[in-house]
Length: 525
Ligand code: GDP
Image (cartoon, rainbow, N blue to C red; front, side):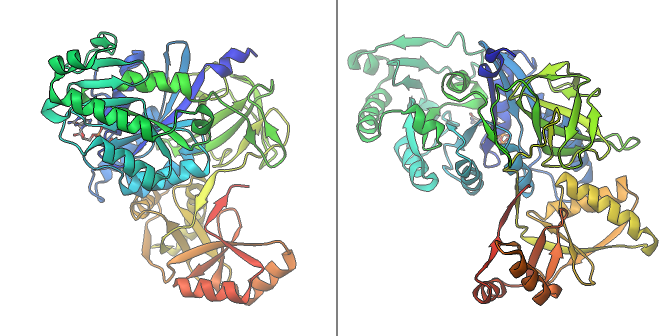
């Protein structure tokens, strides 16, 4: 396998608080590759504005998102894989898992709103994984907050050192362009001009007098701020960026396609190609000749007649070729990957081969679950796919008791897919569903009835918190389980989970059982 196929890959996701401009930016990024020609194509998959009961929209979202959730395109010498993340925060669990499949992220911040709640959460996940982040401050064509304040806020709230690569000259009606600090170059903004990057007017090495003559007061202010900020921030250090401790900051306006090319260039010049990934057994290097991959997302298909699901697999090493025999570590089963899709140009196309960093989709009927590792035979299990302790719980039962068995099977599938978490109490009681966002219940209820023909009744459960419990000493774990049987449930992977109505109950249990660990996050194992 040629080394350069790995080296030229860049795999990333765009993250943001809803409305900051993720969709718009994604669309403009795709324009560069010619992957889409008509601006507005991506727009159809808006996900964060539908009413919670709008089933049509949910269906549409699910259908379209299979096609558009991974986009591959070429830019310069690079092959870029852009992974979409769900816009609605109720599906943030999905987003966290997508972030395990990328090597970098672009964080979009609305210049008028600064750092918002959703951005904070997503960034925490990136930081815990040391994912390098490129920051894009958007909407400079509007009145936004003072750029110096925005930089401050990023540093304080997100805990990364923000290193401006460009600086805005004016804003809103007065937005005149950005000053590229390293290149000592101004890229001039012309409102309404959304041509493709190349013919943006650039001015090299402007003296102050020339700058003021051309841009007036905003030039003077920008230069003053640049002096201030370059004096106060450390120099860009690529190693610190790769560790997730520094983030290059770019200013622009996605809707005007201004500053977008710079993001792609930063990704290619600064962001890392695929690197080694840990398994429970050993680290796997992308340059290894044998194929390995990890299922980071399972998406139900729209085709109800076939009821298949597409497993999204990140290639971690080797070279994938259609028809190769792959072994699923969890089940020990081997299958031949004949039917594989890739996501070029937003159309599902049959893929012939793929390299580390690429995403392939394998339609299946339950062979592949979230977190699965595929290999050419070596029993490896990739680590790090997170499950978060749910925050909302509902009991679920089939309206028709004769359908209880079907409900069990359907919930197993939906649980494997990560659509919802399923807990079976150890003694008696109804199955409990756990979610991070309320909308997950609605989607699951709808899918149970539509896809599995099981109508269900859901009701709020008395639990409000859950913790996965582990202990170094298995005999202590067993004692704990025996003591609290009526409080314990098994999740989809049979991991024991402590369910509580109040945080005080967890604290009390913790105090009496110091050798038991209560985990808010479970990594797939
Ligand atoms: P998302 O929810 O993060 O995907 O955000 P969208 O891309 O849908 O953008 C939210 C709103 O902001 C839309 O109305 C966009 O047209 C608008 N928007 C996006 N980028 C810009 C920009 O650069 N300037 C202005 N003024 N509006 C923008």
